Amino acid sequence: MGRLSGSPTVETLVAFVVVFALQSVARPLGLGGLFVLAPPLYETPVALVLLGLPVEHETTRARFHAFFLVTGSLAALAEITVGALFAPRAVGVLGASGALFALLGYMLTGNPLSGSALDRLNLSRRAQLLVFAAVAVVITFATSAPRVALVAHFTGLLLGLVAGRTRLLRVR
Image (cartoon, rainbow, N blue to C red; front, top):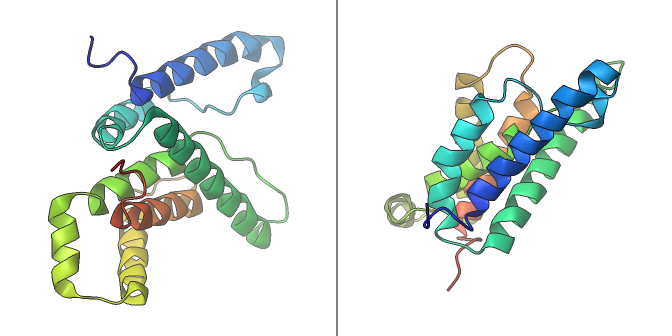
């Protein structure tokens, strides 16, 4: 367990569990809306472990947490902003899936294999952004389900793809 102690992924996972436990206690008291972690709990932690552990090895604890919070927040803001344009009533966003999709995007473009492949293509930054947007659309729709925040997933994934390409989290 020594390798995982101090892991920002494990710290975030513990935060998920604590918030879920508090939400479970608060819900019967009519206070369930105080928390934003949405069940089912088992899906998010598995994705966090699979995506977070590899990414955290490239960065610091503070950068990992900041990346998770910022990308998750931006993805949620995009979801409610776009949702407000098409829906008469505002709908809240639950969960951390936008941030998880950002970790996925970072893994896809932040690794040496995809980095060298993108370098060989010699695409302009604009062309790379268009390719990333197309990839984000395909993955978002391939993983879509009813009542899922598609805009948040797309936004998180696009942010992660760009961050991975620029190696934003890498500590030199």
